[in-house]
Image 1 (tube, protein in one colour):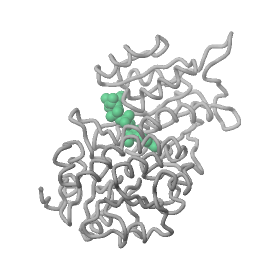
Image 2 (cartoon, protein in one colour):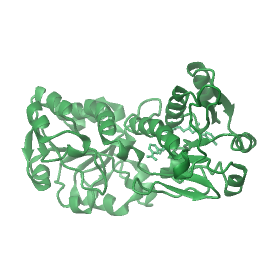
Image 3 (tube, helix red, strand yellow):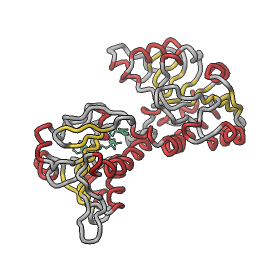
Length: 366
Ligand SMILES: NC(=O)c1ccc[n+]([C@@H]2O[C@H](COP(=O)([O-])OP(=O)(O)OC[C@H]3O[C@@H](n4cnc5c(N)ncnc54)[C@H](O)[C@@H]3O)[C@@H](O)[C@H]2O)c1
């Protein structure tokens, strides 16, 4: 198969769909890989790295789309890319169709095979191609939170780890899922005291089993949240209700109970946030202050660490890329049920019913 890796052209996107290691594996399996010149630069992978791994560098994005059977990328195609996608071409990337009717219509018209990272689903309901980005965001939440606790950026002036003779900072983590556990682990590693809340007892039992004793679990309810926000320096929002807006666990009236300079990192901002005063921010301008509380609400946190994010993402996408290339999409999706769930639009038909539901269209099930 001929596999194409275009450069991402969405604003501020530095990740790339394949690393030189991926190229190496594909070439070893007798496939051809075309990489657009400069595609990996934002993530620290240069043309010569790809060439050494066996790829051919093409100058333009148009050439990559025109010459490839399968396109492997990161973000959903943007308007400039719609016309480049070929009939029958496999496009393997994040699509998030339900949030864009224009993209959905364009991909239907393209008659391509759209396999969406975000709907590839394991038997236990987990989403293996979303997990690494939550891991990055969860770990990064503590790094950012620690920074914004510093006084010059309006934080409380607390060092999370404390020092001998001074108690460590206190971190409250809402949600013990992927983001929450990674955040708790990083905070605990710095020596902070961590309280982690969830409504799922299985998650709390798991955290209790694997974390050191200065990570304390409690059930998530309004009483406990109101109690803890008064004494914690950094609050991490990592809750998720699948397919729904995040619940507002911290309402505006609660901000006045927090100490000035408390920092909230609301990772769940991409689902509306779990804090009433959350609004999406960017890496250029990541924070704002409401009632003396610092809010960090960047909706694409992994974008700030493209090297780590690219490698983390491609580690989990590559096995699927290899299956698609080795056997073709029909066989690969038949044999691997998780991958099959990634099929969203096939040759003009929506096969993932939630997309049709989002726009109140009739689904055509394969
Ligand atoms: N901002 C970013 O850049 C970024 C990056 C990655 C993920 N995210 C987002 O982070 C959020 C969390 O993702 P995840 O992968 O950790 O999800 P997850 O499903 O692994 O974990 C969510 C947890 O929230 C818990 N929860 C639900 N209701 C709760 C409540 N009322 N109180 C406390 N806990 C509750 C669930 O039981 C679950 O354990 C999602 O919205 C995800 O989209 C954001």
